Length: 241
Image 1 (cartoon, helix red, strand yellow):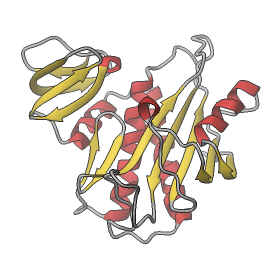
Image 2: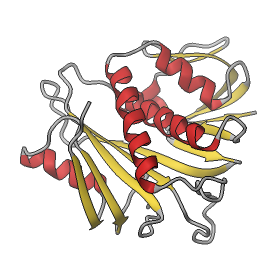
Image 3: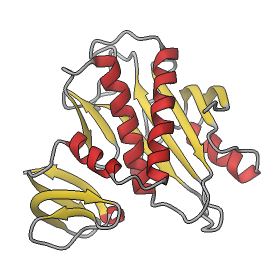
Image 4: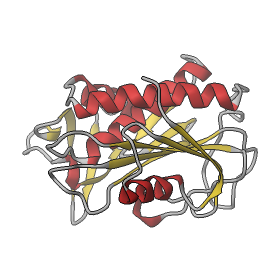
């Protein structure tokens, strides 16, 4: 699919630009906003995303699917799989890549990419979403206290244009799978978490649960052995015990 690429120099946030275009009625399904720099890049739960000029890939894809609405958690999984596939293609099979619930990609235990899915005033009759991705490309240092890495630090010297093209292709494929509720997508996400059949602690907004992680699907969410399922929307974190 040929996508409309909207190039920005310096913006507050590519997600914000995409959301503003949706609100103005000028956005098209599949639009991709890309910036060289973000001055107010954001991550999950209001965290800032370090967006140094020309050192990362900062992009947001607009999705305007038919109803009914899909849980943003499913699109977050799709975004995670897209950055995982991109990094795997660039770094090779030996790279220590792992998704971290719900929206991070790590390499060697350090954050390489993050995903932020947003919607604003969601209308069930005309759903809209923005899938934002920040991928560290060429950074060699990060602000104090930020446990992060970049493709260049992991041994990849691919040109920005190649990484961008590959990521957009992967993101388009994975978001289509999510919107079609492909049953394989949650299973692939679970594999990339590296937690299948392991003892885990699952966090929700009010409590946590422990058990052996047996499965993940659209209908039930996360399945722990010996207890009821946990809906995707409830889960804020999953860690190995």
